[in-house]
Image 1 (tube, rainbow, N blue to C red):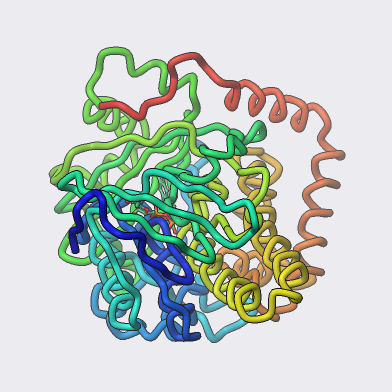
Image 2: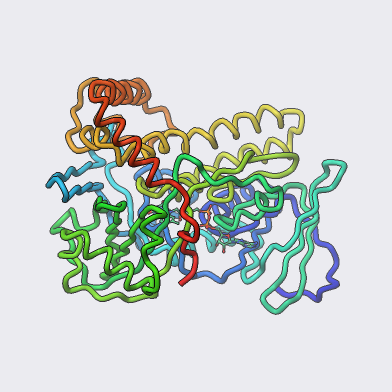
Length: 444
Ligand SMILES: Cc1cc2nc3c(=O)[nH]c(=O)nc-3n(C[C@H](O)[C@H](O)[C@H](O)COP(=O)(O)OP(=O)(O)OC[C@H]3O[C@@H](n4cnc5c(N)ncnc54)[C@H](O)[C@@H]3O)c2cc1C
């Protein structure tokens, strides 16, 4: 849909910037509640995106969006997450069927180009006006709190303009609004980057374990091994700034392959495999914005915060933020007097997921935590609770929190009982996460 640059101003209730999982969740939900919704997506689906391993807690969200069958058709069933620490010869498999809530025994691994296309076509089917190849360029919030003017540019250079009562930033790591408000901050407690590519011919586990994700720890971080349909396997190396700096003049492909060579069990699974796409990198992962909402706007998914993907939580957090926002925005538009209460609840839940995952992310390389992770016992149901967290079951009614608190206490007590080991681990982590000039690798 193209218009001349002097196109008349159009009107909508909600304008969503970004047609990824968060934007394509909030959009159709609001359309179903009777709002006129527009989604702007700068790319054209299907388009490449990283983030292919989903969690069991995604499945009820697919049901509620009405896309469960379509996702099933493109998904590789993932029943477990396997963690391998080859340096000390340990491995542990977490079967989702053993989580506290036994009704969510699996998730899917998906090619994101297909997954995101299902979501955006569903948004269209539900009555959302979708503009692909259309990049939001500017937003002006109106002084009387009555909404905003959003300007966007089509691929052909023509301009479109909307007056919207509410703006949703679902622009992912582009962080459209957070950049404009200058409220985005890198996470001082974490700092890692990633290099990744797709392979054909990687060795899969036999039988029902074929679709399981494997996380391989190595000296400088960790790798993901994500088996998808059609013999495609996503391999990614997540590592610290100092190690990124050692890339020097090597291409990203050489750097990734050299890294894989440092992880023998992964190297073995890729023995007969062939790289089938261009290796890419994402630098300086983790950030958070000072706020996730304000008058007539919200920030969803990665547009608000990004945490390390070791627990495959990104798509779940993005889609869940879409559900939370749909309720909050509906309240703001239909019952403005209830808006402050609705937005407080939105804020609380938006912070809840990243906070709970982050506690484990910050400690996952600590040897005391690694011991707990590699030899989980189910005393006070702590293993079931941990599994539920790994399944993404953190927003529902499953009563895992007492057991999670016990698990954290066990970790603190173990750390106190081994002060030297804990101190060394703390020092190593401090070294790992320190920023190194030019260590970020957003370039090929
Ligand atoms: C290396 C890496 C590995 C990951 N692994 C996993 C994983 O295994 N599992 C998992 O669940 N998550 C993973 N993630 C996280 C996951 O990719 C994201 O959390 C998820 O895609 C966020 O969804 P979103 O809708 O917020 O943003 P996105 O999926 O990024 O969608 C944002 C959309 O907005 C569009 N856009 C941006 N700016 C504009 C603009 N100005 N105008 C119009 N459109 C715009 C973009 O083109 C994009 O389509 C990983 C992330 C990284 C970096």
